[in-house]
Length: 343
View 1 (spheres, rainbow, N blue to C red):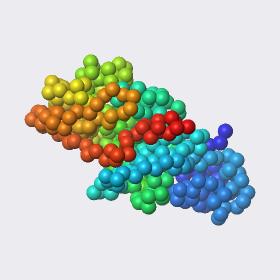
View 2 (spheres, rainbow, N blue to C red):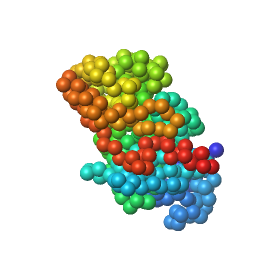
View 3 (cartoon, one colour):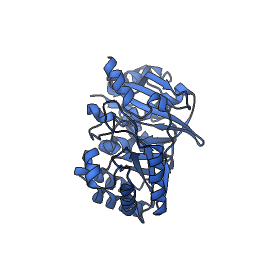
View 4 (cartoon, one colour):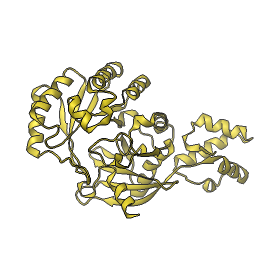
């Protein structure tokens, strides 16, 4: 079985090269090629042919190919459908902000969490992404669009903490010399509420931003729209969130998709405020994405504003997420499903 060479640390790569009878500087050359987005050992022309052949037999360089690209006419948002080496597809979105370009990345092919309002999980989980496949999404978008990605959001297809080891290795790769060089404070990781994964992440003491897809203030509503809540109810989730903020000193962001008649009442706003009172956090209100095949509809602008006002009156820090790429269905999962229907 071949090994993903791009997910090796520089020290691991050096050990592999020395074990094959080649000097350590060859590992540095290989690392430079990989950092520059090289996807084939044949391209590494400053390596001996014999080494290139050995690498080809023992390792793979997981990459992505652009299968489809949509560009918003309303803003500069770009949505990619990437094809992986095994034919599976994942989505990624480039978003332009004042501070630069941000990219929303996928961490899995599909998702097994089954949230009622999400397009990604409608076909279940196919497999986890490798660290190199996450990195390849950044490299492909940068090369194609001629920009530098300065921040990333692990909020695309998949649940990052359900692919914990590969995601952690990817985060470590981001800070390596060479490559894309994105610091932890420019990374946001979103989870639907895997308490065991949050505890593991807490122990890493990473300076990233943890986002919790909360979407409801109580178990009655949340269990109906997010099956994971039956495993880790709201009380347990918020308890570990408080512990996380205390141990890491990092503020948590609570994502709250506003769904008409589901979770957007005044009573929901007041209950949410009571749950979060005193926690180092802020609430990000999101006009819910309307997905074909799903019954949920987004709240009205008036209802969203009233919900925001009630939270603010209770002392909760709250913002409303700006909608980007609405004309290209920029939320993840929809383009992949469309492509699969066309096949």
